Length: 254
Image (cartoon, rainbow, N blue to C red):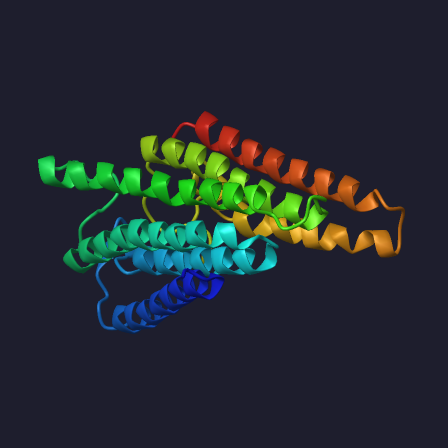
């Protein structure tokens, strides 16, 4: 019988595998000094490996936090399989193209590369859709009739991950960032770059549940409904920040 431990092990082992891949890619980047569009060829695989590891491990953690009935466990396992199967395709293809010194995204130089780029987009949507499935499984199979602020935060974060990351992903797919090095560590550009908004979209999975955890502690010190007010304010501010970053990027001509 499928257990919560099965689903978590799949995701945690996958996250660990991505971590090992990051170490190997980082080590190899010191010997492979090639660049593509002004940036080291292994920078992009490293970013995707780190994001994938965090995405998988957070999904495992949210499964643990959510108090659900055993009926949710089979869904959890297949959600884990969906996360692994979709993201490993993207990471593998991006790493392959990096080793060849070629583009992965925006590469429509021939029919094969155009098809692979389109397939990456499909896999990305399926990956974020896993969070809608996870939200449904948690909500539909909650063990308590009463809805806690923590549960609301988890479900809201998962739904926003799909909506914000998918919308910004399509915007990013239609607008390639400028070449060259950007801001330290992240590589983003200050103007005309959708990636900051996409970052907020993908990481709503972590930030929104964290807002809920912080807000859930407040009733011990403040009125009972203070936690809900704080959570609404923080979440609304987060969505507005995503919208502002998206609008700014789209309205600046490169």
